[in-house]
Structure formats: structure tokens, C-alpha cells
Length: 368
Ligand SMILES: NC(=O)c1ccc[n+]([C@@H]2O[C@H](COP(=O)([O-])OP(=O)(O)OC[C@H]3O[C@@H](n4cnc5c(N)ncnc54)[C@H](O)[C@@H]3O)[C@@H](O)[C@H]2O)c1
Ligand SMILES: O=C(O)C(=O)C[C@]1(C(=O)O)C=C[C@@H](O)C=C1
Image 1 (cartoon, protein in one colour):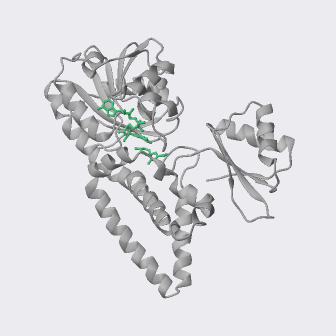
Image 2 (spheres, protein in one colour; image 1 turned 90 degrees about the vertical axis):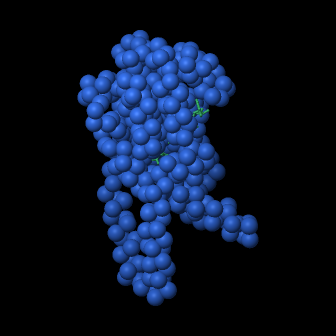
Image 3 (cartoon, protein in one colour; image 1 turned 180 degrees about the vertical axis):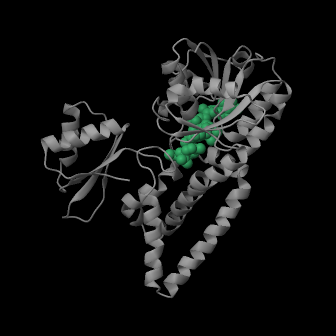
């Protein structure tokens, strides 16, 4: 597709979408604006955008597609600002915010001016922020939720999907209310729990200095998302307050119940508690980014001796397989350790597995 695309907010998500659009529509002219001029400059330097707009007005007026990829509170203010501008009557305006109810309700101002707003939310991301973390494959296989209101013509939704085709995401239409309910459960609530585990650990670590050093694989797996942007999450929680308060009450009840099981030493009920959780989690799709994002991790059982990491990365380097992360799941001394290597794609993970098997007898497995 040809035209002028204006991205407001050049961080992880805005930057990644700009890269996807550039790849798919090489005749598109991508203009970017960020309130933080350093981010805008970096986006231009990295080739994520063609040109920096100094103001929202400058970038928006002749745009065919406007993508707002700023924190959700800012998104509401930007929608208000856009509704006061003489935009191209055919423009499509979309956003990427993690909440939809309040944002879509505020888009009424755009509707009243005859402009098309279609709420959007790519359901993939990272705990990292900023354009330097942006990547073209971020949304591959992920769900991309769209929340068009009933009066929006299907052709306009198709046009937006056409622009976003390079994401290789799976587009799904839901109502704003349902969106906030679903994402409250699978995304927003887990972020609160991850932060709470880290906070509790931090408090206890003040008495026990060994705690941070022992916080190994399991702790890191469940708390990765606690490293996300506090600014972004503050706004998400405030936008999705009702459902999150309800989920917190349910969680408190469940924790009281687990406490009771423990007090009563009810082994079979505790077994059932973990068993039921394992069954549900093991049944979640792992080949697609869905409720649980895939990280394309490969687990390699390795003996605990110096140089083992460089040995394995050496094999991968020989076959030019890029890795995105590598870590050892810390274990007791004198027994085998587990090396976890992360890849950008499933194809890289499979190539790596074949490569390690061809150079060594290390046992590998794919985590879910
Ligand atoms: N991080 C994720 O995993 C993820 C995934 C899907 C959707 N989202 C949503 O996408 C949006 C962007 O998130 P992100 O992860 O890219 O954040 P980010 O912090 O990486 O980028 C946001 C950018 O917006 C800029 N910004 C803030 N206020 C602005 C304003 N008024 N005008 C212009 N620019 C402004 C910031 O300077 C920053 O560069 C958020 O609404 C978030 O909820 C995030
Ligand atoms: O992978 C992560 O770090 C994320 O937190 C991504 C995640 C999520 O909760 O799944 C976070 C917020 C977004 O709105 C969508 C995706």
C-alpha cells in the first residue's frame, strides 16, 4: 500500500509496527513523532522512520494512517488533540494501547468529526521499552486484537489489516469491554502478581542477603514481567480498575484457601491444586504467541564445568545461528546444570537443536 503513515510514540511497539509497515509496504512514507526527542532521533537513525515530525499537527494533517503507540493515558489526550485538527477525511486512526474501554469511549470526538478510529492491541511485547528494543518479528503469530465499533465499515477494518499485514499477526475482533476483561485476566493481573512476588522477596532480602543470589530459574521465569515500565503499567491498571479489583478479590480468596490447606496439611488437595494448574498450563498453545508468549527457548543439559557456554555458543556461531539470550538455571554444585538459550524464531530454535546434536551428545529439550 502507498501513503503517509504517522506513528506517534516511537517506543517498542510504535517502532516495531513501523518496521513491519516498512517491510510490507516499501512505498509508504513513515513519519514519526515522540515527545522524547531522543527517541525520535534514535528511530530516524535506526531507519525505523523516514522523517521526524516536530509536532503532532505536522505529522497528522496529511496522513493516511495514524498509529498512536503511547502509554494509554497519553493516548486519550492524543485522540482529543487529533480530533481538533483538519485531518485527511479518509485517514484511519488506530492505537496500540493495552486497554480499550476508556480509549474507544474517548474516540467519540473523532467520530463526531467524521474520522475513522479503530482500537487495536497487538498481544505481544516485552518488558523492554524504547525504540532500540523494536523488532520486525515482534508480533509474528501473536494475536492482534481490534475493537472497531459497530458503525465502522468492514472495508475500513480490512484496510487497516492491510496496512498491518507485515506484522504476520492473527487479527481478531472483540468488543472493547470484552477486550479489557480478557486482557485483565491474561496480562494485567499477572503483572500485578509478578511485581508483588518481587516486592515480597525484596522485603525479606533485607534480613537475608543470600536471597537475591538464590533467586534463580523459577523466580526469574515468573517475575520477568516485573521489569516492565512502571509508567506504562500504572496507566493500564488505572484504565482497567474494575476487573482488576474483582480479580484481586478472587485471588485473595484463593490464597486464603491454599493457606488453609497447608494449615490442615491436606496433601491430596494440595496435590490437586498443582495438578490442575499443570494440566491447564501444559495444554496452552506453545507454537503461537498467545496467552503465554513463546520465547523459543532451548534447554540444554550440560555438565557444570568452565567453558561449557562458550563451547555451545561456538557450535551455534559455526552455523551462524543468532541467539537472543543465554542463561544457566542455577543448580546445586556437582550435578548437571541446564543452559537456556533463547532464539528469535522457532526455525532458529530447531536449527540450534540439530546443530548441538551434530557436534555433541548433550541432551536438549524444548521448554513450554
Ligand atoms: N510493552 C508491551 O509489551 C506492549 C505490548 C502491546 C501494547 N503495548 C501498549 O503500547 C503502547 C506503547 O508501549 P511501548 O511498550 O511501546 O512503550 P515505550 O515506553 O517503549 O514507548 C512509548 C513511547 O511513547 C512516547 N510518548 C509518551 N507520551 C507521548 C506523547 N504524549 N506523545 C508522543 N509520544 C509519547 C514515549 O516517549 C515512548 O518513546 C502502550 O499503550 C502499551 O500499553 C505495550
Ligand atoms: O512479554 C511481555 O513482557 C509482556 O508483558 C507482553 C504483554 C503481555 O502481558 O502479554 C504486555 C502488555 C501488552 O499489552 C501485551 C503483551
